[in-house]
Image (tube, rainbow, N blue to C red):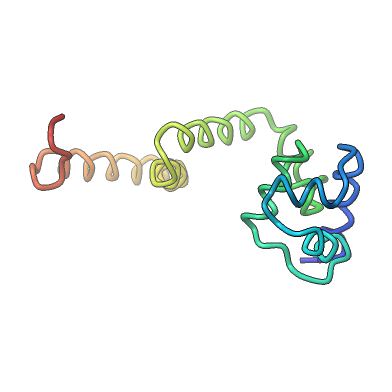
Length: 134
């Protein structure tokens, strides 16, 4: 991971949003000094902080990471893009575990998916694995 490239992308996105380093720092709960170090590529930006920065600057995480070309190709494939959006919607509605389950399920072939459904059906039939009725 090229820290200076990520830092440059953060700086560019921040300037496009017309924010100072201090304003960005305030919005994500960091110091101006931290933002300066991130932008200069002196320290690695923690992933959760990078996502906060992307959210505040209204850019995709992939843009800050410098994965623009990959992102453009990935989003140009309509089927893949729809699947990714569906998985992200599942995550927002049902949480990370449901998202992971769906990702794992879609990576299986037809036989694997059938077996996975059988396993889940077996688990649901056993009371000790079900949530209590509310």
